[in-house]
Length: 150
Image (cartoon, rainbow, N blue to C red; front, side, top):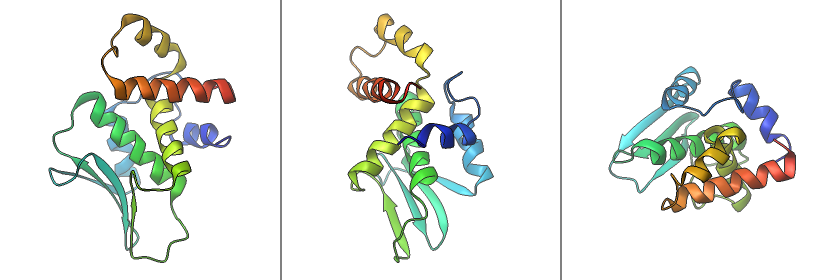
């Protein structure tokens, strides 16, 4: 996890100065030949490697912060967990992945979506008062900052 921030900063040079946008994610994916597929046939999202090709499958009903969160999380799997040691032709990275992989991918989402200077404003504004997913993401981001000072 100590190398997470520098590696992520290399991929997203604006890290820490502003929040990531959907456009940033789509540009990142296009530059690396990651196909983002919107489909109603998946619960949230998952990153899949199939015969050397990268895919992110996303529920087509997701919008706004939930969509951005899932995209950032799956990009985290791409950056930090591929290639794996698997010999399978298909490999899935989703909620059933290794626990440490999920923690790293969630840290990626938190770092990309929540620069430290924006967390305080979000908490005090109460914008996430009823959004448990974002409250959890803020907790992950604060924990990362406490451990690594970033």
